[in-house]
Length: 321
Image 1 (cartoon, rainbow, N blue to C red):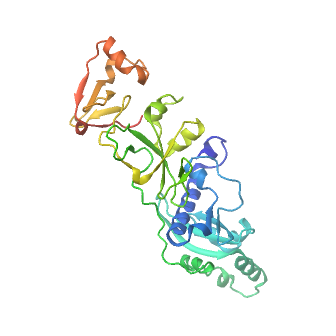
Image 2 (cartoon, rainbow, N blue to C red; image 1 turned 90 degrees about the vertical axis):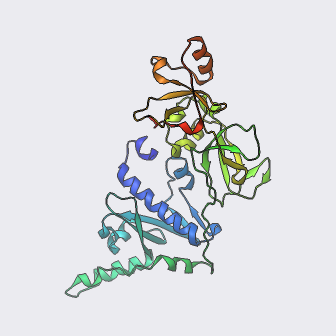
């Protein structure tokens, strides 16, 4: 939540709930609406963990401006509350968030002009029971589809099996270097490589040696933030069609922190090389000294540190610190 943590303005929990609502509606749009007929204002900001746009709305759907309101308290969806908080957008989508859970329910949507009429009616109503006008006839989500052209069930979800942080190699290349997936773009983004448009989903990949040259310890960064880190630090990434990549059989590279899976209380080891298995030195032998990844092999040899060899199946990545 960079827009909160870097500006010291706003509430992280509130912003998180708001973002979850936008993600839920984005999933609805991707499932049912043609990609060329809707736009998410915060698509790039969300993927790159950057501050949100300052647009007055969250989405454009069929030319209508749409704002997503997410709340734990259903009273936030009363007509007067909705209209007073957001009178300018064309449509408001309501998402209910349950306490202490990430699951949301899209309750429905309403036109703001309907809210305006509802509020006006409440103000002029002279009956003895105002509660008769408290309810709002929310339109079900599937009726939003009727605002645009007739379409079948779209199902435009990404088919790529890869996610940020995955270790991959180029398919069909026996000597391919292990890369790190940085970002997976939605399928509607038209990807191109060397000026040629590709059919398939765009995967942004960089390589551990490139990341090692960066200013921070990229291995301690959550995979979801790698795209933001590379963008901010101008770390070079490469574009691949997702069908041209495969998961690395040996995902380990020099500098990785690993543990031996057969140990009940394993000590952390540092990968020195990863050829014909994995060669590691246990972290305690470094006595707290930070050795650059590029110098690990030479350092271990000159200091006569004990190197242990394991098969790929015997080790696993250690938890991030």
